[in-house]
Image (cartoon, rainbow, N blue to C red; front, top):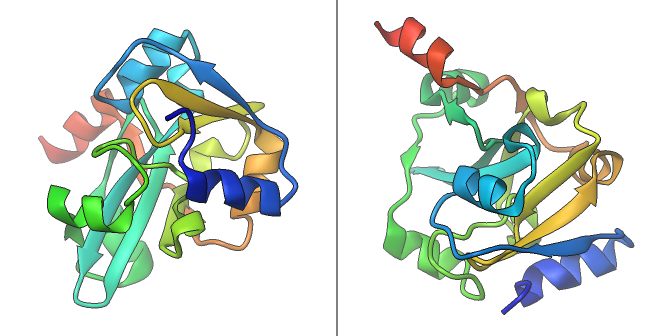
Length: 164
């Protein structure tokens, strides 16, 4: 599978130009970026969260760590990580763990990190562990513009400093 059908339909329905980048099998977004030779800060990873009010997907640069406290504060929720079985139900046409950052294509709420705002190009998981979707940064911003956004992640060095 090169691209999940739901995601492909969403992109085509929004008249977004994109191309795919093939890479060797990887298990994480940051490894996908390395394997595909794309900048890790332009690789948008998706982290699925949930609470009693439902699911929300946090989208952030692959080289950052999500700060769950910042997300909860921004959204006034009590979110935690969703489980793998939940991911399989939410993203039926995707391989487990290959969650596309454009999760609004799946009818899910999304919050995205402001650090992705100025990237000239954005890469996201295509729904498997061997392909990425490449979008122009302005197209990504257009698709995300009406969704909540804030600084919700930080680089590993800063994350350690905050919690130590």
